[in-house]
Length: 195
Image (cartoon, rainbow, N blue to C red):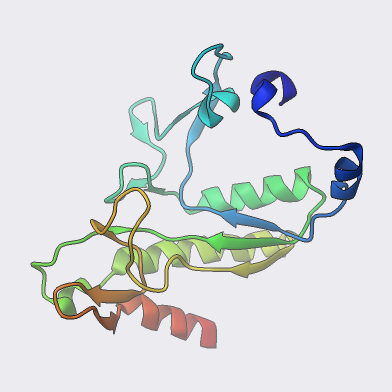
C-alpha cells in the first residue's frame, strides 16, 4: 500500500499507530454487487483509489454478465457474491464481527406507472431473499455476522443517480406532496422478520 499510494497515504505518529492496533470493534460492509477482477499494472500519473487497488474490475467475462442486470449499469444481482465476501472476511480477518450496513437494489423511477403498480417491487424481494439465504449459510459456516440493514428505508436522493432510481422499501410519491406507501418488499421484510 505504501508503494502504491505513496505520499497520498496519511501519516500516523507512533502513538497513533499503536492506538490503532487491535482497536476494531466490528467491520461495516456496504455490499450491493459483485465484480470480476484481474491484475492491473501500477500507473505513475493520475493515480486514484481505482488505480491504487491494482485491479481491473468488470461486470462481464467471456461475454457473460456476473449476474442479472438491473436498472443501474453497475449493479448486478449475484446472491452468492455476499457469501463469498463473508467467507473471505472470516478467513482473512480473524472472523471479526460484521454488520452489513447497506444492501439493496434500485429500480428506475417511472412516475407514469400508477402508485399501486409501482409498489410491486418483486426484484427487491428476490434481491433481499437471495442475500439473506446466503448470509444464513455463511452464519452456519461460522461467519460472525451480527446485523443486516436493507438500503434503504424509503426512496431518496441517490448519490450517483439523483432521483432517477428508487432504492426504498417505502415508495415516495414525488408528485403528491411526498406521500409514502409501503412497497410489497416492506411487507415481505416484515413477514420475514416475524418468522
